[in-house]
Image 1: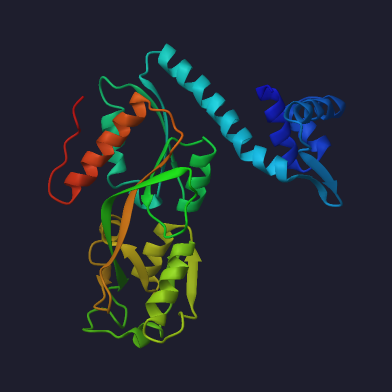
Image 2 (image 1 turned 135 degrees about the horizontal axis):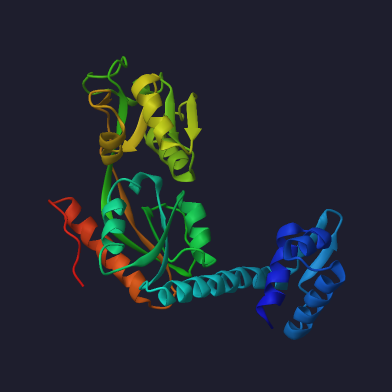
Amino acid sequence: MELRHLRHFVAVVDAGNLSKAADRVCITQPALTRSIKNLEAYLAAELLERRPRGIVPTPAGDALYRYARLMLNEAARAQAEVKAVHKGAKGELAVGIAAMFGDHIVDRVVAAVCGAGHDVALTVTQGFFEELVDALRDGRLDVIFSNLSNMQLPDDVTVEPILDLNAYVYAGANHPLAGQKRIDKPALLKHRWAVVDQPHMRDFLDYYFAAAGLATPDYVVRTNSLNLICSLIADGGFLGVLPEHLIQRRARPGSVKKLDVPGVPIVRKAGLVTRKSMPTRPVVELFLSELRAACTIDAFGAWEPAMD
């Protein structure tokens, strides 16, 4: 079994069509068919089947697909790291982060990791938790730093909570609820909400209001843009739930107010997610060490980069 066989197999699964897959991998369709047949012969299993809507993997093909993606991505990452080290870098690192950390904690850690004497070839990808976990599992990422979801995670990843995030309900300074004391949950239902379009926020809203025997708000704007949520809260008359550090950094001074509502602060965990099968690499350990140090000190005072 060679990497080219796996590359051809993944292309067929992704395209669902032999002709399109052949174009993607720049070979003829008969050559692609022979490659798949050779792979099936090696594994002694049928990997693909034709259906009216296209080609789909068999159960054996499904089992192979994730490993194939992982091996292909790991091979590409190995090549990238060899090139980086050959050019004088200490290694190549791919990190996934939640959007809320792009200008909080991670910026300082990246500066330290890529600082004098380290010379790390670093790629940072911003995304939401579920998509970052997918990228971690198939080898595109080495580590994730994110607010942690309540979703059931696969057995092949490890989660390390290292930071508490305090979130509050916010409104614009001119909102009718701004400045009121002891606002009850029914009053919150009368207003529009702007929230992150992620399963954990849907679950939170359902739980938060159901605990008081209430329905979820009817008027909810969901978006993957944190900047839009901040703007809608500050200027659009919306309510929203966001971590305190994010509001402090992205909202104009005096433009938003923290509401006095039940059940706040809402404390969520943030932390590291890694793949259990990931080999130990100094460049990864360097990043993890700097990040743990930054998170430990962040709540207590000034932060300084960890020393080698």
